[in-house]
Amino acid sequence: MTFTGGRFRRARLDTVWLDTIRTVGSDLAETVWLDTECRSSLLAGTQLHGSQMRRTAFHHCEFDSVNPRAAQLRDVTFVDCLLRDVDFAGASLTGVSFPGTTLERVDLTKATLARVDLREATALGITSGVEALKGATISTLQLFDLAPALAQHIGLTVKDS
Image (cartoon, rainbow, N blue to C red; front, side, top):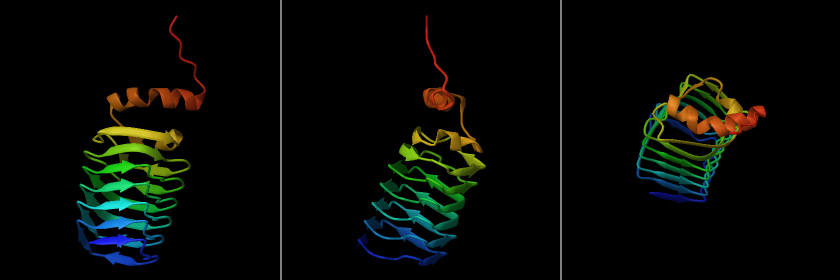
């Protein structure tokens, strides 16, 4: 099923199972997602700002240019997903995990993270807001990948003689 440009603002998705849906340019701002599962779906250019997600799982989904600014995510799992150009600025993420998921050009500016597990993410492409990673757990290899962004954030100059 495809929703193009649909307006579902403030909708409540309670114990919903979504399979192979496509939302393109849709407005899902301020929606509430509770005990919901979404599989093999595409969310592109979708507004999710101010949304609340709790006990929600996404499997094999693609998020492209999605805006969950100031959203509240609690106990949410992104499994084998692609998050590209996703704007989590000002969002609150608690108990969120990303096993097998690729993050490309993700914005975490002023986001608040608690118990966020990024260790199993396949790539951490964070364009801004690396300071918001406080409250997240990453692997040693991911730390090496993030080192240039972290050094830049604290104003550290790294030079080899």
